[in-house]
Length: 303
Image (cartoon, rainbow, N blue to C red; front, side, top):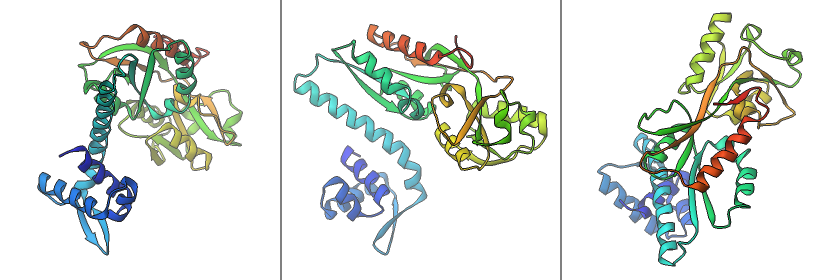
């Protein structure tokens, strides 16, 4: 399979038809169909059902989409890099880094701007995704280093601990508990909850504390990002408990955030490969990152 086939597959998944994909990729509809047929022949099974002029993804197509998206992005970055080398543009140092989406839209833009202002010969490629994807990106050398939750799932990574973070309780504006300075598990007895995904290690710790305090846990919505949790709380669906490291960066007049006490600490840091040591500019960037992550030191602290 090749990059063009993967681009066609992803475009068809996004638009639901060869006509839509042809518009996205600026290719003829027949070219889209040929590439899609070629891909299906190569992998040995059909990815779509044809229904009334639309392509309905089979479960196999949905299962492949995430992996294909990551692979397509890697191949696209490789092509850009080879184009730069072919054109003789190899003098600039490129730092490739992976971060969760929540940090790429809050803390990082100003940090990157301040860092680049002191580094004329450095360029940055910022890859965003969940922590497990960031670990895979480091292992696959798609990024030079990644910001991860510790301990990492892949124990083959070299890690540099940066900060430990407590939790924030997120309440809809005007909630009776908003008058309190801190929120405990006992305070949340009987409350509808918006909880982060079950794959997060902190979820187990939070649920255990809530069960000890109130028995059954009333999870109304399970969200897979901190931003989504805050937005759901803003709609009055329930209250949430989120990492202070990220939650403190998400300001909204529609919610109130209070420290969850006693705090449940989670550690975060940088992951790299042992055989790929960090350069001096990378270490400078990480030092700036740690300084800004620590903040006031109340709910985040250096480690």
